[in-house]
Length: 166
Image 1 (tube, rainbow, N blue to C red):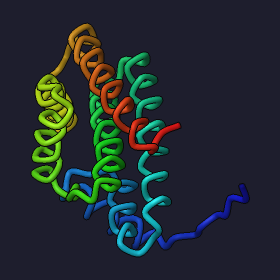
Image 2 (image 1 turned 90 degrees about the vertical axis):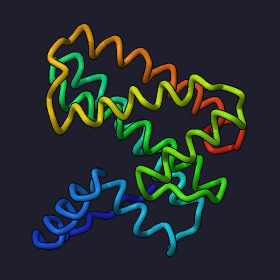
Image 3 (image 1 turned 60 degrees about the vertical axis):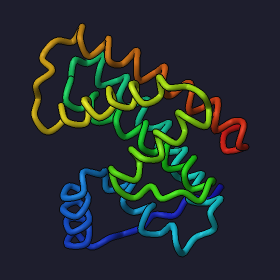
Image 4 (image 1 turned 120 degrees about the vertical axis):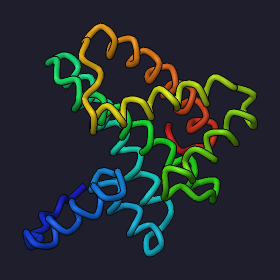
């Protein structure tokens, strides 16, 4: 695949970063959401999956390095990106925290996996930790990471059944 480089004005990048922060999202997720209405759904779904995989790698690396706040946010981002991919394929809203929470409850019911809701609550706790820094123990974050990996495993299994992930 030929990769192109894009030169974006700093003012636009800063505006995107501010808007993403105000919505509690990563700039990349916000950008995909903004383009979703204009692009082929397959392209945006692929972008969400790529972000999911990248954020999982970055979360694990941040955890290894002991950067608890970055690990927390990257785990959250990985969950959100995968949920966005699944929701987009199903034609469900996924642009706000509320949308995601409602979608998670629907998935838990549909898949008969009530633990999805509880595991998503762990992801929400990690997202809050990014802003408030209340998780101070690496051991505790490693326990939360186990829950995130379990949630991701369930979601990836469902994504496979939908043909999102090979």
